[in-house]
Length: 93
Image: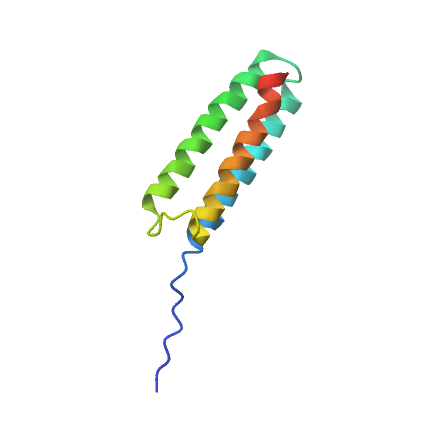
């Protein structure tokens, strides 16, 4: 008797999305620590935010279930909000 323990929920997409958010946060923090109060930190933040947004969009496109109520959609939405929120201090400073 063989048992099939396959899970239909896509856990890779939200895990990668949250990893993108974490990498974005740490790289923004490093840029603001290396160039405190300088325009270079703002440019680094802008470039990294565009790259993170593009990566999240790519993850959304490759996801099997694009519904916002799915696990993938929720992980991508949380990561997108986190990336956006991380960029706000660079705009306001």
